[in-house]
Structures are given as C-alpha cells and as structure tokens.
Length: 575
Ligand code: WTA
Image (cartoon, rainbow, N blue to C red; front, side, top):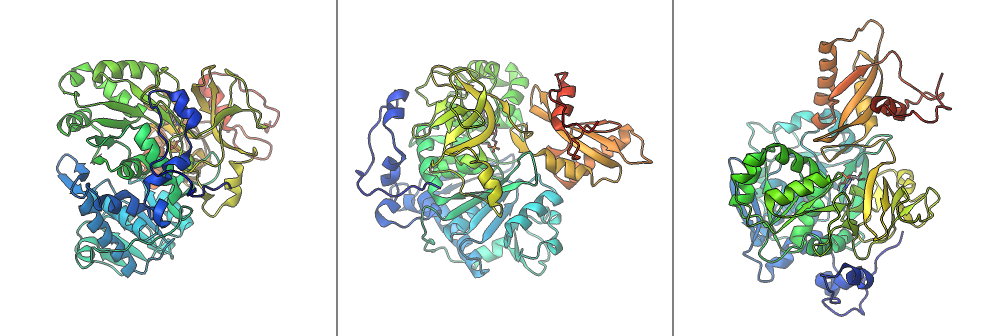
C-alpha cells in the first residue's frame, strides 16, 4: 500500500492557500505541506499523545483549557498541562501492568474525563486503543475483545458484569474507574493506581506507520471487523480539523459523538487537540433541553453532530429553540447519515447557521467529502472531496462514470488516514481494494456536473440506525440463539427520525407460536445480549424465509417486499 514519506524539501509551515476559493485549494494543496506543523517533521519521532497534548504544553497553550467535561451533575475543566500529567500517570500505570507497545488496551465505559485521560495515556506508551460503545452487551463485548486479544480493559464496576473473563484468557487486567468494595484478582483500582503513578513519562516514539487505534465496525457479512489506523492519520485529522471544522484559537468545540464510534475519536479527540482547541464533552443521555443548555451556557462556537440528533431537536419544537441563545455558534456540521434538506433549512431558522455535511467512514479515518466553510451548500449533497482526496463514481470494474450516473462511491487509495489493516483478517482488507487503485466505500452515489456528491444508499446490507452502523449478521446470529427462533433475516427499514430502524423477519421453531409476549421477549434477548441500538424495533414472523439454493437468507427480497418494491432477479432463490 502506498505510504507517505516525510519530504524534507518542503518549506516549514507549508504552502499558503486561499481558503475562500475551493477550486484553488483543491488544485494546489498537498498533504505533505502540513508535515512541517508537527514536531516529528524536525525530530523524526512520532507519538500521537505528544502531538495531541504534550507539544502544546511546551508552547503558550500550557494553561489553556483542553477539555471541558459537563453532564447533568458534573462540570470539570482540564488544561493541556493537566492532561499531560494525568496521561503520564495513566501511561506509567499501564507500563507497571506490563503493557507493551502494540498491546491492545480497550475502553468500555461512558463518556467521562477518565476515558480521555486513559486513551491519551495508552497512546503515550504506544499501545493500541480499542474503544467499545458503552451500550454493548456481553456477546458484542466478548467478540471484539477476543478478536483483538485485548490484554487490558478500562471499565466500570457495573459494566464489567458484561465481560466474561473466563472466555477471554488474554485479558489480564481490568482497570475499574469508579469505586468498588473489593478488587478481584486482575482488577485494578484506577484512583489508587493513578495516585501511586508518576506524571513524568517520555512518550514511546515511533513512526507514522505505527498502529494507534482499532475501531470495530460492521459489514453486511460476518462478525464486526477491527479497522486499524496508524499514527500518520493525524496528518489528515489535523488539517481537516483546521479547514473543515474551521477550528480557531478561541473556539469552544463540541462533537456530540461517543468515543465508542470513530467520529468520537477522530473528531472528538484527535482533530480538536491536534489543533490545540478547547474540546467540550457532554456526558449522559440526549435531551433537547440539556443539549441546548450546553450550547448556550458553554458558549459553544463549533458544533459537530448528526442528522438523527438534529431531527430529534427539530421534533422538540420551535418553542424549545426560542428559549435559548445560540449567538455564540459560528459553525455547525453533520456526519453519519444523509442530511435532509429540510433539516438544513430548519437549522438555519433555528440557529442562524447552515449545517455543513461531511462524509467519511470508520475505514477512511478522517473526512473525505466535505463542505468547506467557503463552499455553497447544496442541500442534500454531501459536498466535494477534501483537497488532496480524489473521489469518483466508478462501476464494478473501476471505470469512472460521468456526472449523474449512479455507481460506487470510491476514493483513490493512499490518503494519510486510510485504514492499514482489518485486524486478523487480511482477506477482508483486500475486499475493499478489489478494484485496483480504488477504495470502494460500499455507498452508492452520483456526482453532479460541478463535482458535488449525492448519497443514494448502501450497496450492501449494512444498516444505519441513528447514525450507528449495524451489521445484519450480528443481529441475526443473536436472534437464532433464542430457543424460539429457527431462522432470521434482518433489514433496515426507512424511518423519518432514525434514518433506518432494524426490522427482523424470523421463522419459529416447532412448538412455538407467535405472540406479542414472545416478540417482546426476543427483542429483549437481543437488547440485553448484544446491544440496545442493535435490537429490532419490529419483528415479523414468516412461515419460511426466502433463501438461495445454497441456504443464504435473501435480505434484499425481504427488503423489497417490506417496501413494496419489485424483488428483482430471483434466479438463485430456493423454490
Ligand atoms: C454513512 C461514520 C450520508 C455512509 C463517520 C457511510 C453518510 C457510513 C454520511 C459510515 C453522510 C456517513 N451522508 N451517509 N454525510 N456520512 N454516512 O463507519 O453509509 O460509522 O458508509 O462512519 O455512514 O459509517 P461509520
């Protein structure tokens, strides 16, 4: 795979661009220009935590607020120097536990200052960070920890109940961030171990190609896959933070995503701190009042959220927006699902700002298609490629298609934040690059004559519910573990607020009859066994599921029937 080399010939500070003119930046920008903004440009030594935090402490940002944490009961602020010291303590704590460079340190806990301190500490010693969304239940947690062979898990006294240690022989230590009365073998008291740990820690120096973070995400077949990113992703996370998020010295930036998902790390940790910005994190659950209070009281200037959240705020009513003052907001952005034109129009009325859409994926590590602040927004379009990125609509052979043709959204390989591996699964990695020279995203889209991209849907069966990616296979596997379920096929069904909801079609085993109570039991079985967001909101019982002759459930037939669309080619169906 193509790799970025440090080009010593470049002038420090990189080239200058006119950010008010997309075309000219697109024509002239090269990622190599920003190398000079990093300390490794002169030292040759790379460490992500150093670039995020320690480097700023050596300059005028030492006492600048790096992190504002708020929830309904708690408000704390941390300076860059606080985070340097705390991450040093956590890194030393991990070293004492025997964690080595490249070991997987996982985090399974709600948003709180400790998770940020912990992730920074792990990065500082060169461990690979593995985030797990807090809503995952036992089987989701087990699959991911086992595949990654995680040796340490940072979690809470409650969430550890979903971690079957007997099934995870490689998992040596649980670090418990809250208090608990007794500590079992292998359990570490976070507060105590931190207190015993020193702050000074020389970062583990490495290269741009050293692994840094492993995000599990879903495809349409098989178990979730571990998408591995390397330290060099910082190049793109930094410059997109600067140009797309438009982060400036005095900004208060709020990304609403959880660090269990890629937006919550690339743009909830990396982009803001690489730019030395003040990063606000709001813990707890969604509430329109709570969110608006945070926007107003914390004087948020740059706000990055998702269509489902905007739609939920929209449905909270204009009476709600009228109660709050959004005058500090300068820039609003969205990611994760199609952003409806009516949401953009409503957002402009409600906040006085146009919502800027961005498109990218776990696998791409950073923004790919964006609306730079200078661009005219075309509501319904995701925008244009970020400078340095080549995007196209290609057919299945890799031929580029002319404007307005529907095809695969593809990216020329070799961008800095491109994933470098699917953990333990090189064959899966290669599938993304089956068309030579291109990364094929799995999204279908078209491009208009001015180069704006328009999302049309997924090519595969991946479900996007409330902006969260769910693989039907994982849900189906859980469903058939229930004693009443013989077979299961799972699809995404369009929903006005959540984008899609999960609908399951099942057939029952002998001796079971469909009833509301049974459906509720099956739904709960998935909710408590896998995760709440992956539990089907609708379950329909069928006599028999449509299958290919080789026994594969045909989700596209289920989906077509559900939507009242033609079922298409049935030549491979069983009977
Ligand atoms: C979808 C989230 C429409 C898309 C960063 C993609 C979008 C998947 C947009 C990746 C957008 C993301 N408009 N759809 N602006 N952004 N998607 O890996 O289907 O959780 O392939 O990464 O979300 O989801 P993931």
